Image 1 (cartoon, rainbow, N blue to C red):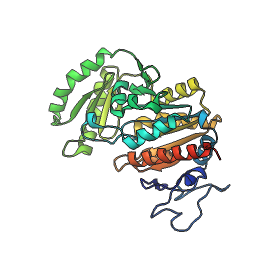
Image 2 (cartoon, rainbow, N blue to C red):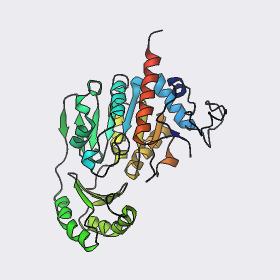
Image 3 (cartoon, helix red, strand yellow):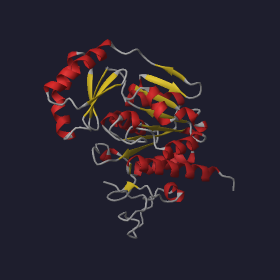
Image 4 (cartoon, rainbow, N blue to C red):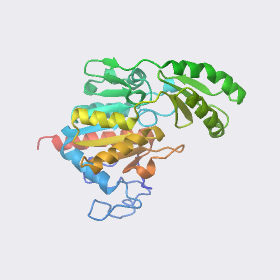
Length: 321
């Protein structure tokens, strides 16, 4: 697995030539040249060949680039109370800088679009006037340009599931699990329980049965099990958005299972000729994306650091000589 992108960052030159971020355990700090060559980059190198190619394309033509990213665990920390998961100010500031330079920035999240906009303070950032937030895995949409929201009504089955959950949790002895109403989905969080992992495992079968009985689907995450209406996933949402804005290159940054379809979408578009960079926001809880990524960041702070360096690199490249 590659080293993680550190919070203490390398210079913009490091980004632009595709070198591995220097850290105490990285190949570069040990004196090994990790610059992009014709040879495949493996082992401790911090970026894959395909990722480095995509990064070069983004730096050469930022006006054609779409920066796509998840919210929770990517630019906002995972916390006990989801209502307190405010986006990292450094990440939002970097996105605002990028908003002046790239084709578009799109946040694709399982949360309601309104919630992500509020917790991200996206409406308050002048540089994000072209941002789009796709909530509920793409079913809802907020466009910063006019402040408009659109989406589909909540299915009645969601309310039925929410009514059934307290008795189910009581039967399992897990009444301390937090129930979160998310509009077109219901999340059951085990993070605050004495043994979150055991509770998560115990809840998987009964919640899967409950979801199936109501014609819904179960989506596992980081100590959260989400029952939601069938429909769009993040891959569908990203493909449609990229086509809509005519993206010439893509970045997608995510952290857990719900982001896998978006990663698959980037790989599919990459195979069809659109450069794409996959970044994993890593954690100690779940790193299912790490082996599928071109670059690994050390959680939301590492993502904020990388976005800041990307903004630095693009601005430097566009600065007059």
